[in-house]
Length: 258
Length: 381
Image (cartoon, rainbow over all chains, first blue to last red; front, side, top):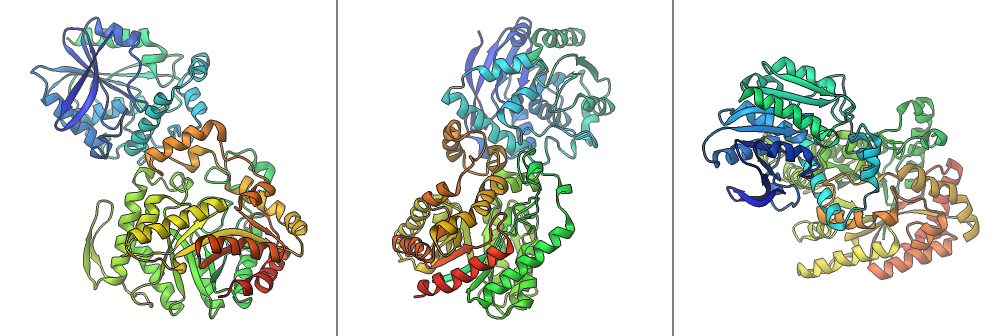
């Protein structure tokens, strides 16, 4: 089981889950907030010191007003890295967290050992629309996040506590703050992706209805040496829907680059 | 009491079978369902109705703004206001309102209102709103910043109308080196600003502030809510140290009058039920995008959600009459209902929506005439 800590960046406090020893691996979560600590994290924590912080504005809106856009969140995590003892970290980001990771890495990769992007937001590919998660009903959203509809039905059949519903709503507000417009991308990001000069991996579910895996080609064009792994039979949440396979992908990549 | 004849200009020839296949009559309803020939007829009928309202003695004729919807065909209400200026002489023309946060340059709103005010020689009443939630899907504007943008755009527009230009405006969302309005508004210091709202204590406090004292209109709400919000405004004024006037308090509601209560109800039924159940009904995701309301009020709404269902629930005219959201009946009944609300709140502005949903031209005219002859005189002070 991971340890639950509170970390501080400047005057912002945030929850942090951590487990494992070894080189640090920082995971930046997606729009739905901190994911469950499942097989994916357990497998990574067997080899690395996994750090899973909650972004400011997620879980609680206490610090929401301090982060107005994705650039703010990228700068926040650069401050977070500056506050860590020396050495480099493996940076992994999913969806919105992948977008933050890419923004961070274009600004400064000096503290990064590698970059792994899982179904990242951040780029727009003309003619290939992203799904509209803000217009979908809660059921549509859940169904569209998974390839395997049995998994979606399991999620839908679980009762949601009042506390959990509040947390989901808080996260939805923060996701809208960061990603409503322009929807899920930064117009300037594509121009600067070439600045990412660390070993990089891209993982995408082939049945991602929120951010189509066809976007992978554009990422490949701009990041030198980017390796892409497509997970077949998988939706927008590879680290949840195909936890072991996705962890294996990441571990093989990290093994090769350390 | 000041009485307005208000129009939404719904697209009545809508194919309702097709409508039922889409989640909303807003934003996602394919515009192939709009027939321009029929639409042009609609505009002509509706303009005639508003011009007729002046002849019938209404003090104000009023229009409003909505986007990408069959609910109302006025994405640019100032165009309608401009046409009305040319066809009327006395009536005030109210634009209730323009949705400030949706534009990237609020100076254009200040300019257009100033032009209309000059063209009409001071007959313009402006309304400042945020638009309903669907508007943020239609325009892409981030609903999280809706309140910030509203307040900033408001400050900019009022400054543009009142401060000698050129001056610079430095905001979070809006930045202009030169604000220097040509033309300036005709009315001094500027056209009245009304705040139509479904009510929130923050908005009431802001509108009632002694610096503003903006008339507050509660729109399309149950009678108890109307009374509650108008009372809140009155109490807020007292907290600010002044007595609020009746002309700061308004109520906007669909109204239908016929010879008898039964006849009124049956003639109004299709119009009222289509307004609420076909044109206005939206899933919550469209009506309340994240950030459109505060997180705490959204949490409360979501707690009710299970009982409310996945979208606004269908309502019958009986239910809407019972709650006082609509006022339907014989002249006597309608006079009484409005009289009760006036006694409860002291309101002095009534915004009557006399065409609604699919209500046809003939019934609309009869409604307007009966309201003007049998109800309106009794509301005069």
